[in-house]
Length: 313
Image (cartoon, rainbow, N blue to C red; front, side, top):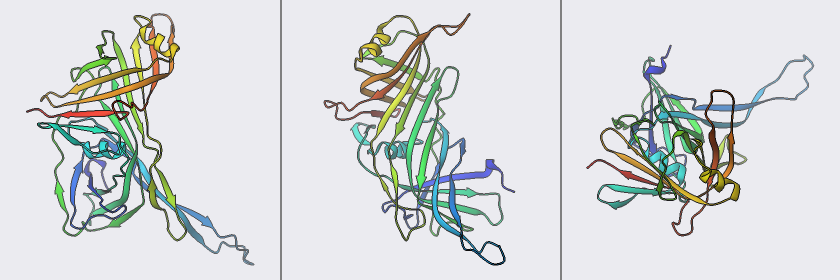
């Protein structure tokens, strides 16, 4: 039997979609749980037999998909962030780097290693792309997230890929939504109210391409990128609710700094509220402004979202 505590996830970038590089340097991936799985669609034969039995079960389609859940920590998921946004980290100054949404398909192979089995079992998923990402910030909790991934296929094996090496994961501490949440600005002005919860969601709009002659997908096609999120704020004045009612655009950003001083700053230069409500939910409850927003392309900035990575000097 295999224990979840002894399962390792590793990944390596693919230069050719669906092809694991030779002698790969597999990077250890930090995670809290996963549901990455390969599913096969089987079709029963419709043949009529005189002995009233079924003649065959035929594989007619397949897909690999699942979620990888994690706690946000500095530098642990930078390639995954770049992949789901279709962009590339670029140098700004010193060690500071910037990532904006782009039009690149950045696939990788993910290996699931069941270390406590004899012989060991290795499931290598090829052509993996994260199609969704969510980050959740709530009072009194660690910042958690999920990557929803799609893939071409899986290759099970009892031996490690020839020439593979293992690269250790970063050891930075998971960030929390308490002391590590440093800044929250709306239209460039620090928000002085009380925040209950925030979320940031990315949907890459990737769709698999199915072709005759291939079990599963043969290609991944980029679709419309959607950046959305939610805000749960204690209601203190009508400023933000007025923006919802009037359909007024706004910009906002927030900054996360871990205990060592490493920081991520997320910028949404142009957004609008899609929904908003201010209600009295019941006795002895606080009135909240609960809203969902959608990021829009900003022609001046040239992007919908920007993430600034600022490691401690």
